[in-house]
Length: 181
Image (cartoon, rainbow, N blue to C red):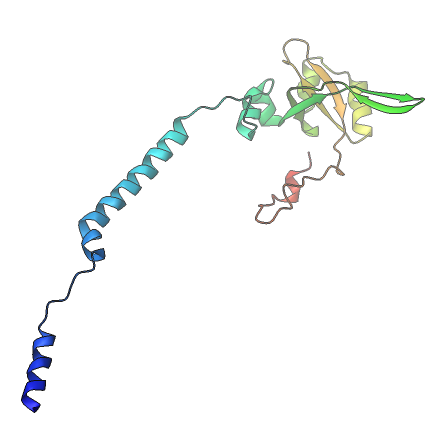
């Protein structure tokens, strides 16, 4: 009896192992082919995203704002490009209501305080306007081309208008020194 049990054990151990199909479906060739397709897809995606020009009406990026600023080279070198929004508010007192006209948005530029001489050299602001703006610790901003008739205003930096995008988790906060002109 002992011999029979030994034989049946030996025969069972030599039986062929069935392949589950998983090994056949994912051999080295198919894995290499899938990796190649993945890398090709990533390459095509990168090439498409870098060569695609989007309509600037739908994209508000720093580069787009810099490009459309009046006198873009001067603005970026001596100040900051900006979006200027003009809106009119109408307030009635009896009854009390507030009405807002359709705002207009156009490109503009904000000059750093140490670069006001650009405006003075072109006779666009007087020394009295510079003195008044400096006394209020403001700066100048303008819309329109400096070589024609720009609209120049003494503007105030409102520190109370917080940028809520900076305080989001994962946001990178720039150094505080870059906020002041």
